[in-house]
Amino acid sequence: MPTESNERKGMTQGSETSTASFESSISRLTEIVEKLEQGELPLEDSLRLFEEGIKLSRISQERLDRAQKTVEELLRVDDAGRATTAPFATTDDDR
Figure 1 (spheres, one colour):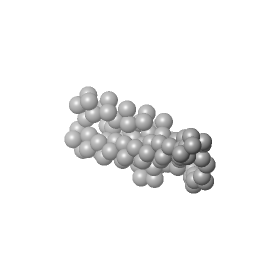
Figure 2 (cartoon, rainbow, N blue to C red):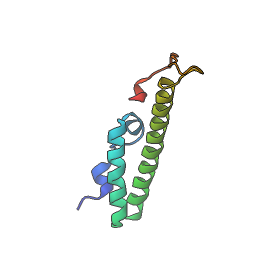
Figure 3 (cartoon, rainbow, N blue to C red):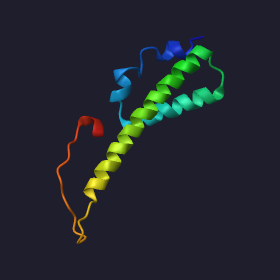
Figure 4 (cartoon, rainbow, N blue to C red):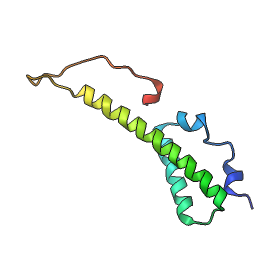
C-alpha cells in the first residue's frame, strides 16, 4: 500500500508551495489538517505534512496581510472625508 510520502513526494514542496494560489494553498492546508487529525500516518509522514502545513499557513497569512494593506490603502480618506489615492506596488504574488 502506498504511503502518503510516496503519493505526494515532490509535490507542493519548495518553490511550488510559495507559487500556489491562495485558494489552492488553503485547500491543501485543509487536506493536511484532515490527514493529521486521522492520526494514522507514520511519524515521518506526519512531520513532513506538518512542515508543509506550517509553510502554507505562513505564506497564506502573508498574502492576507498584503491584501488587507491594499484594502486599507484603497479605503483611505483625508481629514475632510474625501477618498485619497496613492500609488502602490503590486506583484504577481498579490493574487
